[in-house]
Each structure stands twice: as structure tokens, then as C-alpha cells.
Image (cartoon, rainbow, N blue to C red; front, side):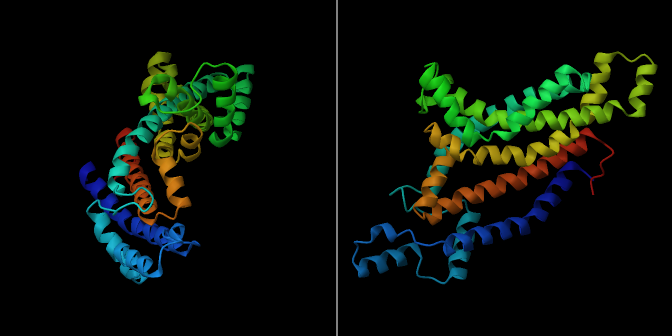
Length: 309
């Protein structure tokens, strides 16, 4: 079975999951206290009724959800309640590249450092370097970005005055360092621990010992055999991790005042902006499912023993 057919089948299989996620998000958002028009409390009742009719809020929930599905299938989510005269698609098109740039750079840094740390730990398990790095990884895993970001600002921006306190500054390098480091540290620890265990498992397999006995060079053995097989758990990890880091930069973007999706999502949730909240959460769900399918395809390509069923 070709990769294309397998990928298409996996995408089709994710459709019910996506529908279920959208239903849950839609219902929970409507059940939350308040409405998008609550902040307009001074409006006359007649005008409020007119606005509800304009936004379709006077329709039964099933009707509202059906309208949302039809529009979402065409990439339309309507006008934002919070940001007047701006469509949700315009806001996502403006904010997503910002979050994607930070998220991709952070994940790239995390993969490189995590693989390096995992390989160093696996070279001499139980040694001083291994013990030190394991403690460092455990510490990094225990400090979430929401805690690290304010500390980073306090130390490197306020105390040392090496970086700007906040702001996008047109994507300048100095403005990127703080968010990228805060997002990457957590995944460096996770990837490092994952790769350490994977390297140790692969290195202990009999065929690796046989290749060493046949005189295969250590560099070739590490790159062509150990790294290739040890990377399989990493590929599985990267699918959901990448989607979460692209969308889940909420606290970091708030701390560093970055105009990404995370900041818009917080404002939308606070203001009960149904259309913007659903637009961003729908994008997050689609990214998660698509990246999971892509990671499965990469796994099948790396390891031919994985059957494309």
C-alpha cells in the first residue's frame, strides 16, 4: 500500500475524532457563564436582540453548530466579537505565522539539544555526566514555561539588561530568544530522557553487538543503525508536541507580549468571543490530527517493519 493511500485513509479515519472535538468545544463554550454581548450591558433590549439575530445567537444550538460546520469547511469562522470589523480568518492569518515561527524554532532547538543530551547520557550510563544530565533534565521537566518565562524576564531583561522585556519588535532576534528558550527547555528535558532510554535499548540489541564484532565503524554504527532506530519514539513524540507548541504558547506570548495565537486565544476566552475561540481551537485540533498522521508516515518510512495497514 502506497504512502499516499495510507495517509489518505488515516486522514479520513480522523474525521470522526475531529467532529467529536468540535462538538465538545462548541458545547462547552456555550455552557460557560456569560455571552459575547454581556459587555454591552448598557445596550437597549431591542438592539441586543437584533445583535443576537445578526450573529445567529438566537438559533438553537444544533442549528448554530451546523452553520459553524458549513462555514468552517470553507475556512470561514465569521467576524470576531472582540476585534470589531476583523474576521477570524484574518486574525489567524496574521497571528499564526508568529506562533509558528517561535514554535518551530523552539522545537528545532529542543530536538537538537535533546538528542545530544540523550546520546551523551547513553554513552556511559550511570557515570558522572549521565547523573548530572539526568538531574538537569528532571529539573527542566519540573519547570513549566509559565514559571520559567517570568524568571527569564526578571534575570535577563530586567537585572542583566541583555534582552528586551517584552514586545515582538518585528521578529528581531533579541525578541525571539526569550520565548524560544522558555518553550524549548521543557521539551529538551522530555526529548533527552526519551532519547536516553531509546539509545540504551537499541545499543543493547544483539544485532548491534554483531555489527561491532564484524568491525563496523562506531561512527557509521551510531548514525546509520543506532540513531535511525532510536529516533522512532522521538518521531511519535514530535507529532502532538509540535502541534501543542504551535498553539499552546499562551502564557509565554502573554508574558513577552507577542501577537501570536496564544494571546488572541486568552482574550477571546475572557471576552466569550465564540467565533475566534472556535477558530483557534479548530486549527489546533486539525494540526494535531494532521501531524499525528504525518508522524505515522515518517515512522513507516524509517522502519520498513512497520506495516502500512
